[in-house]
Image (cartoon, rainbow, N blue to C red):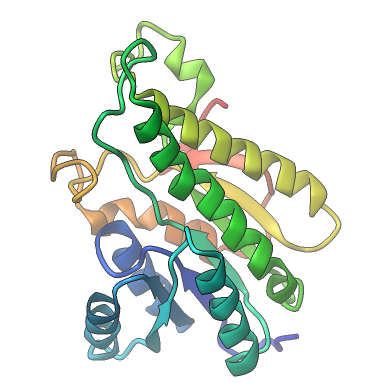
Length: 244
């Protein structure tokens, strides 16, 4: 287990660009060692080099959240090099062409979204839990979305009420269920689990539309990852609690 003087070890999935990159930067600025999970070697290494040039202890970790062998290899590498994991940020996420309203959404598109946003996050979490249990105070942060809120999806007065993407929205609902159930399962472990919505952000996923830049969007999840103590099993954004 880590001692108070040791830097925290953090894994951020989908970390080579966008919100994941900025979460990595902000966690690294708090003197954590950041493992930047990414599939593409060139992009992953370039992202880690860029943060290293800022004085951040960052390195690329080969990780495809949809590939079981890749996940197992990443967990083995973390165990060999660090012996534990203090922070896991399940940031990797995707949308898919063909996603849409329930009457028209492509089944293949919905499956594709779930493969990354739900099954990928679950697989990585399961693989990293033994390492998180070696931490004095492990933290899991799941990058969710207000689009996953059943309460808001049913409220015609909500500003995003007309955004009906069955695959994406329901994938974030399922991710929230992972947060709720995992928080309950780990309630006596010292590991906290939270869902955090970064807000509509100008990234590749949104076609670079959104009311905030990645650096701003990363603040809430990075803060949740670095916070000491706090309640587990919560869903929030930068403004506060969100309804499930």
